[in-house]
Amino acid sequence: MSYAGDVTPLEAWEKLKSGEAVLVDVRTEEEWAHIGIPDTRQTDNDPLFIPWVFAGGIPNPDFLTELELQGPEDRATELLFLCRSGHRSAAAAAVATNLGFTAYNVLEGFEGIPGPDGQRNVNGWKNRGLPTNVGQE
Image 1 (cartoon, rainbow, N blue to C red):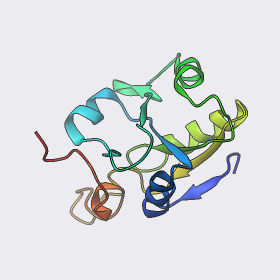
Image 2 (image 1 turned 90 degrees about the vertical axis):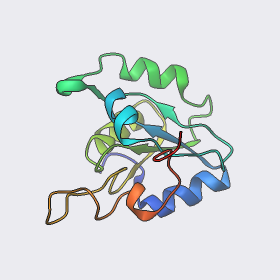
Image 3 (image 1 turned 180 degrees about the vertical axis):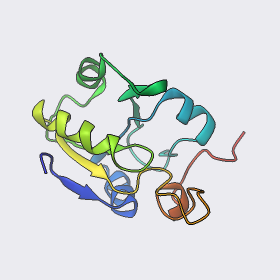
């Protein structure tokens, strides 16, 4: 593992509520718009939205620049990377670590793994009942 570690969605939420971390959602704009985003209004920090890839899996060539511009000045501030299922976020956490950030991967991601019926309703941020904008106007 080339980053600080993995945390569950519930552990990530506790870190966010305590003010010790910032969430970095690395999903695509389409995922944010159509699937939803974490609602962090109960925390001290707004999430950062920096796509790791664009639609079609095209890498975001500006990911590092955007992270350096939007990320906290204090590189010791924990960054919690979130994607759909926890794979893209692990890669993003590794890159952030190479930039000197304290980076964690959020296991299970926002939607989690597909269940037996193919639906992503088994685990993940949303399915663990953590705050989202899903269903809000």
